[in-house]
Image (cartoon, rainbow, N blue to C red):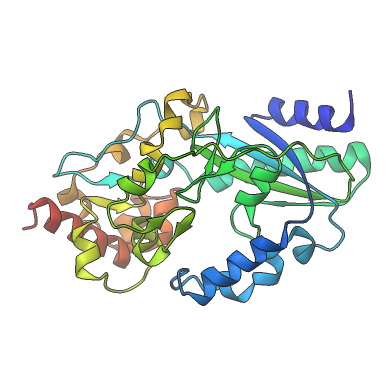
Length: 310
């Protein structure tokens, strides 16, 4: 087998579901689009989007020695297409209904990275969502999927339910064929967005429910708040609306099995959590990073929208 074949086989053995190879550079158009995104303020308060544009615009901007990027995908497809919970309950994005996926993906990336470094004597770096990596264009360049009109990666095999991770390496590996865009004339994801944050291939984070419930601090514009429904952490609306979900398969990873108490927890019970109880209840969960103040803001909005506020 080639080096690529060997690495791919090892990655699948470790539990990754998709593996692709891309060159460690991106077309200049991606840098231009990033600059436009920031200049228009569509990144909201996510300052790191603005301050680390050079590193994000190209793998070699972050690590000049990189020659290839190995893009890894982990399927987190739910058993059933997500729908809003009953009005007296909280809707939590399906990716956040168990332990923080960063822990699972990063552990596997490090395992694969150590194996590659030992076998081929090369330097490498691993990343999962917390570094200035333009992972969606890299995933498309590596043949994992394409960046759909909702700006997320869409795979013909896994729909939009993929956690992404990357390994930058000094190995000069032949890239895979890029994936073509298969969105066509479909606008299902755009039509499904509750707040109108999406236009074709563009997203305004300032209107996105995922951003508002997770990243945004302080009060939320009343009009946007009224459109959040009972969503208290994240939003799956555009992902679930994509027609490609009918070809997807539920994940088989036990560590991603939803916690029963996070599938549709009652709003009144969540509203009673103080800081100590909040930290205990969401221990190991990505929800913990919002902090109790922002989380209770989200709960209050959900209660008002659902007509169950006391």
